[in-house]
Length: 122
Image (cartoon, rainbow, N blue to C red; front, side, top):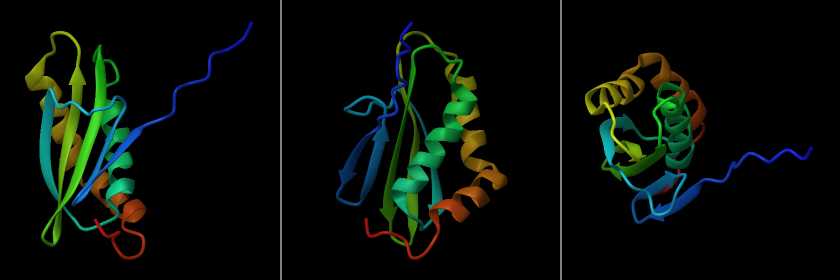
């Protein structure tokens, strides 16, 4: 019996001042939470945020994660969320995303991974 390969492709859309990462193109933010983070590599950060957000929300039916990272002066503006097909417990989902973005351990790990070297030009 043949096994189906897992889809591992993510759509990466370069923006004038950052990057957008999503499973589906174009990215859709039916659900979104924003945060401000220190400068680091935007694409590496987007992948890390997406991964942690997915771990928290993978049981949310119809959820397709998306992350937008843009430079805002000497910080990064992160929008994390995505498309949701069907009804959702919005308050709970937003609280879960907020918890991911505000978690000090996540932020430290993201900084170690995405903060290597100088931040990429965005």
